[in-house]
Image 1: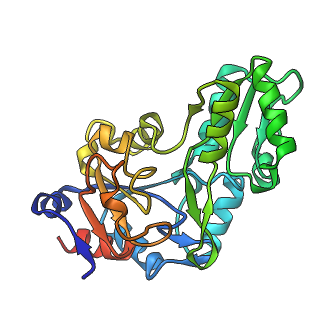
Image 2 (image 1 turned 180 degrees about the vertical axis):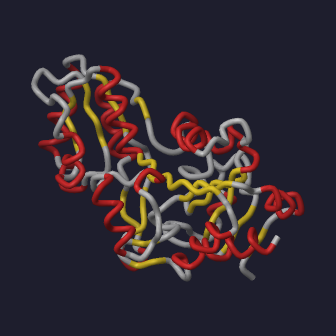
Image 3 (image 1 turned 180 degrees about the horizontal axis):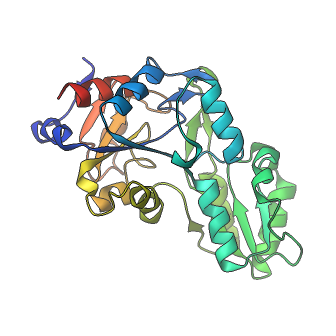
Length: 273
């Protein structure tokens, strides 16, 4: 069986006119495309559904991400991609921050035009495995003690790597800095309401969120928070970081409107209705 949903969840698929699509774990896992995802995306476009890609990917720059997706065979425009990394840069610029950036080198490329001189006025934390050692974390800690603000690009607990193996996300490291420095992080990516609103506004669907589906593999980071607050149709896929029983976790206050085996199965259900 490819799908599970309530009767109301099934009926709400009829009204979908737009989709916000998670990337890693939903359309691809590392360098492997999820089953039939490329063709499914093409079918969605042919059906006239508006599409935007919303991702918390922070290990690489937006340009590198776009090149990766097109290299995997996906047909998309660069302007359709909304990343938490881009949102973090916009926040840094709007606040005039001189940030200490805990990011991978490929992500740092996106901040070359940002003043990063000392004294730093913000610590920005993304998914940066090579920077999550004691030396870097202690530097971030002391920067926060000296008055800098803490910005968490997102707070995911984990993500799916090659062969669908789970790996620790940045959430635990953001939480460690919050605890040590007694400072609350400002979060900018999914599932923050403002992040989804950027994509909805670009789709001219900010006033009709009930006609937009959010599709992802993380019932909390993709389908919780702002997705719920805005009234998006929330569809969970059983790929990527999904594990059996995710949708019934204690932290999940409202079950997804539908649970599907793959992104392609969602497209089949939407297009066929």
